[in-house]
Length: 238
Image 1 (cartoon, helix red, strand yellow):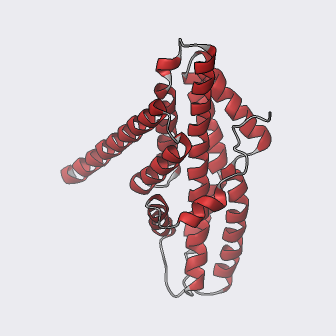
Image 2 (tube, rainbow, N blue to C red; image 1 turned 30 degrees about the horizontal axis):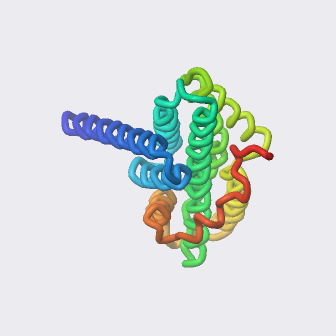
């Protein structure tokens, strides 16, 4: 029992350290202001592959990204209007990068299911049902975490995050668009599992995490291009 307690404590400490590292890396990326969207996308993917892709871990990852983005623009709080506008754009880029990473998670889950089907393997119906339920909540979790982050911020930073959340709710997100296709694939596969006896059981979470690692490492570069929007959800029409 003592060993189990120690393992649990080590796991919590490890997760906390990874979250702190993610937050610091996002803060640095935003503060430097170079290709923030891509930096946040990549950092988020790496964090998801390390910390897990259950809803609790995902909420922790999203919150860390948004804290890092908020803190990364703090030095700009008392600058000129032009500098404030530039800082708003950095926050928008960070939120867009997070949205893209979540869309790639949804795409990786779809690929994991399709890849198993192509090899005549089947996930268990329990794996599919649990993963589908989590994925259905992903966009709402993203929007909720965005609103919570806005509530924790002050001044124009809070206003910017609230505006981004409102815009995303009205116009949709990249992850929401991707989820429609992903969930349809899950529904088809769940029907196939119900009709045939599976010969091989594969853990969906592990398969998806492996794909996420490949995306983060740049192996599946085409995937990043497929989920990138023509106009980012946080951008404004001119």
